[in-house]
Length: 104
Image 1 (spheres, one colour):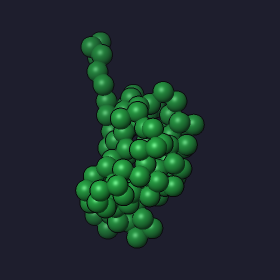
Image 2 (spheres, helix red, strand yellow):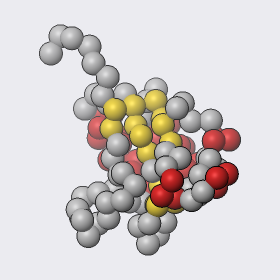
Image 3 (spheres, rainbow, N blue to C red):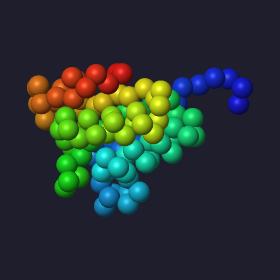
Image 4 (cartoon, helix red, strand yellow):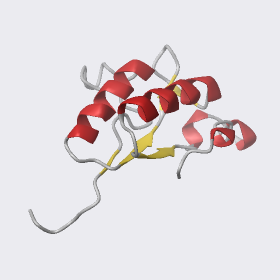
């Protein structure tokens, strides 16, 4: 393909679990690995959700911080978009990762 394009990946989504699809990356390390594979294939943006240990949606800033650290290390230059989706909390809880200053 000679026409430039932007590839954005949403590797986890807010709802799928391992019961729905055993390959869905849930843990931070699984998400970093999966995003790195997409990055190597040409993806330039990642839309990311984080999950609790029970696979439910989370807004935990610490999980987002670990995800950001891993993505910046393994996917340099990739645009990071952290979800503030409503399934992981309400109000200020949903934006708890914004002080991490994701790209989007």
